[in-house]
Length: 352
Image 1: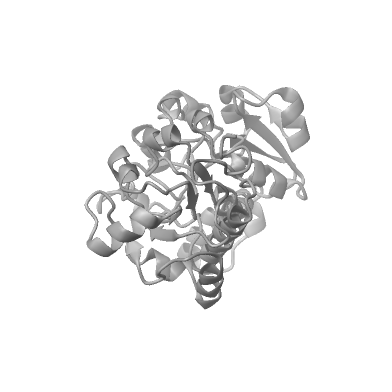
Image 2: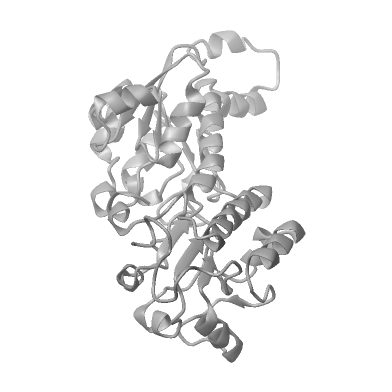
């Protein structure tokens, strides 16, 4: 049986109750990911050196090479090195990859699927803080918070804010969600208690499924033209590059807000900037292209832009949710159970 769809049958037989495990991720990440509780649980679930974290696998130091040769499971996170055919040749016992973050595209290669590795990720857990950030941004955008905060700093005297903000508010406003990804679906779910109309654009979602989610499916042009807030949750694919360009942005109503917590490449930044400079549109940008805007970029100082350094995803205490998710997956593996959130190669063509 294929290891991503059932029990982990294979040349080595049933997985060990305490499989040999190697941590592989960027420098310093393991210390933030695992607290004392997680380290104690990890030691109980697997045979591993908690002080050994592989930052390099193609030409590893001796200790890492020895651990890789013995490893049945790799526990990865951000900054994990690519698992090339050469790396897999040095890991003959490897049968599973547990990724304590979202996308696996950065480190999994075709060789992993050819090998039949069982793979899971914490994408579902990482979706939660992004959706929460988005919900907060939507509610604040409709209240005109960017405008009122800037004006308050400027006016500094009694003023008729009711009159100036007469068009603001969250009652019967329209939110357009681009992409019914894990995050997009969670955003729609979080919006349910509010008196908002939700539009959805996703070519893989039909009307019946959209209705079950609580949204009305519409073409992208309609979503842009009819939404007070447009929030982007599509994956980064060749087909989605600059999916919001000059024409789409021009369709958005005056005073509308664009929220991007997905990938900077989904929005044509050259087309967006003039709309922001004139003040016609507002934006909440947690991601941009390039990832770090130049130091002289107007985005840092525009009063109608909230620019954050890619912090919508898991950080601080939220990293511990990713660790819990990964260790839950490891426990299932040790008992010979399939992963609850398997990653399959065919899903990567239309996911992050």
